[in-house]
Image (tube, rainbow, N blue to C red; front, side, top):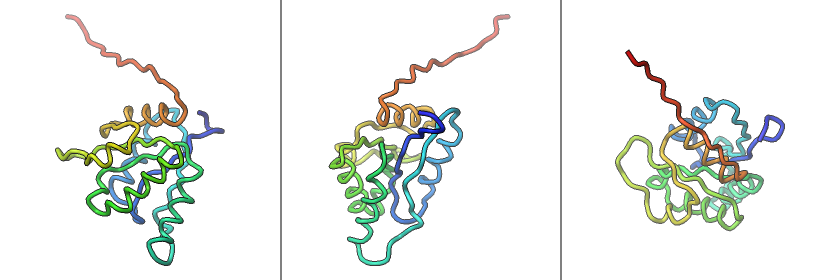
Length: 150
C-alpha cells in the first residue's frame, strides 16, 4: 500500500452520511501512512425504486478490496445492510465489521455470520484489520510504554 496504490474501500451506508460513517473517515485520516480511496457515495442516491438503489450499491462495491460494515445501521434498515454484505460476500471480498459505537448492545448474529473480522471502534484496530483483509499485510505493531523510575 502506498499513495500511488491506495486500498480501495467501501463503507456501508443507507444513502445519507451518518455519524458513524463520518467517524470511520476521521479514524482513517488520523492514521499515519495509511492511504485509501473511498468508493462509497452516500450522497449519490439514485432516482427510482429499491432495485435502482441496489444496482448503484453494486457499482460502488464492485471495484473495492474491502468493505467496512457499520453494525449500527442494522437497526435502521436491516434489509439494505444485509444486501450490501451479501453482495460483498458473493463478490468474494472481505468484510470488516465495526461494533456499535459507544453502546453496550451486541452485534446481531446475522451480521457476525457475514463478517470476516469484527473490530471495536479503535483507529489502530480498524486500520490493521483493513490492511489484513484487503492486502494480507500484518502490521506486527508493538505498544511502547515509557515510564520513569525515581
